[in-house]
Structures are given as C-alpha cells and as structure tokens.
Length: 334
Image (cartoon, rainbow, N blue to C red; front, top):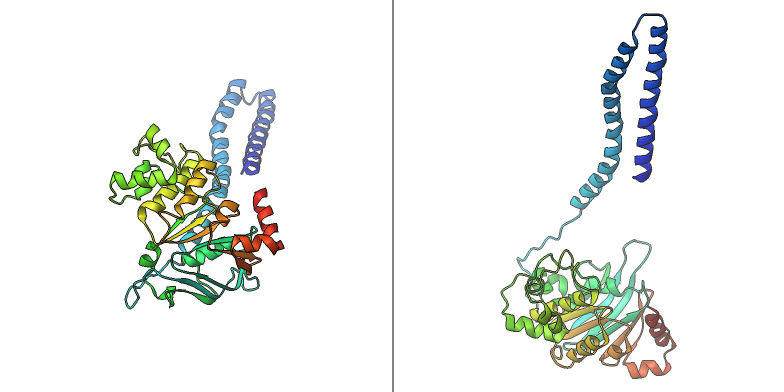
C-alpha cells in the first residue's frame, strides 16, 4: 500500500505539472502573438485546475480499489467457508467418562500427515500432560478433541461412543479450554468470567481465589472493564481470568494449553495445587514443559512429528528416556 501510495502521488504530480507547463508554453506563444492577454492565460490556468482535479480523482480510483479488492476477496472467501451443521435428531447426549483416541490420523494436506496413528487413553478423572516440540501436533490434537477438525482416519470415543454421534453443543459444554492465546471481551471482569450467564458473586470470587486473581479483584472490582481483548490487563491477569472462567463453569473436562506460561511462580504453584483439590475428579489435559506440573501428572504423552514416541510417569521417563530429556531442555529454552 505504501508503494502504491507513492506511485499514485508521483504519477498525479507529474501529470498535473506537465499539463500546467504545457499550458504556460502554449499561452506564452499566444501572448507573444498578441492573441491573448497575460490575464487570460492565468484565468485559463485557474479553470484548468478543475480538469486536473478530475484526472487526479480518476487516478485515485485505482488506488482505492487496490485496498478494497483484497478485503472483498477475503470477505467472500470467509462467507464461502463451510459452516458447522448440527442435526440433533437421532444424536446421543454425552456422558462424562473415559476419552480415547483410536488410531487417530489427521492432515491439512493430502500428502502431509500432521498426526499419524495416535492411540491415547484419557481415563475419567486422570491428569495427562502432552509434551513435544513446536509442530509435533499437540494443538491439532486438542482441536480434534473439540471437534473443530474432523479426523482423516481413526476416531475419538467417549465412554466407547464416537464423539461424532453426540450433540455437538452438549459435547463442547463438557469441555473448558484455557489456552495460551486468550480473547477477552471489552466488558467487565465479571462478564468475561461468567460469559453472560447468571452466576452468583460468591462462586465467582471462589474461582478468582483459586486462579490467583483475588488480589487484583480486591484492588479494582468485578465490574472493572478490561478493554478490547484485555488491553487494560497484563498477560498473566488475562490467563487468570481464563482459568477462573473454566473453574466457574465446572466442566468435567478441562484442557490447559500452555495456560501457566505468563503467570508468576506463586500463581503457578496455586494452579498446580488445583489438580489435587478442585480438579481432582475432573479429566485434565495439559500442554506444558514445566517439570512441576509433569511431576503431578498421572501420565505423560510424548509427541514427535505427529506420532506418540513414548509415555509414562515423570520418574520413569526422567531416568532413561533421552528423548524426554531433550524435550524438557527445549521447553526450558522457550
């Protein structure tokens, strides 16, 4: 756009100055031949500005279209995207239980698999950590669990039933996600935690205390407006609000996607403690490289290049698994 603006401005100036110069030259000849007065020449130049202004406007049409056309294309591409179609007729109501990935495969492109033959069991009430380098397929796996994508092979089951057979809205209501990238509405802390549901302040404050947000709430209030996407908050405070949001909705399955990456040490220990208290009976899936959380997990799943390359508990993996140690070292760098 900067290049186009410069090109548009330069072309405009060149044309205007060429026309003005041409009029001066022709007008001077007429003056020398006594066919026009000097005043007539200047009057003609003044009127010619209306013509050059029109030419400028025509040139600017191309410049304006250069910014509008790409946006229009993106808009129609977005509108052409396939929408989720939920047909509740004949669908099953989900029931909290064991989650299992059976021979799961997924690819964005036909030739390149992101996940290949994944087999993972998440027993009811278990605490599972997914660990792996960037691009190993961790976030894609979470998206598949949420039915944001459909697997290209294999299936995901809940209590032995394929999750595609459940009412999508009810299935997703069973899961709360605390991600690294959090979106907050330009509204109060209360609204961002409750998501506009009727929840009493006592329950909200309890969730804020568990998430480490209580001190900040005491300084401001639940009615404090956070700004567009939490512009008035730090990254750590945004993550605490997202955690409080997950706790207050009391979903049986909670997913943490690097949810403690921006919190302080005190808050991190507080969140880790939730695994043995508020989240004790829930199925928790965590993406992290932090050893404090890895030590608390019932199982650690190692992902590499879209495949499971190992699993177990922290004590066993830290002793003799070189790949696990390399993954921990990579996590510490980030």
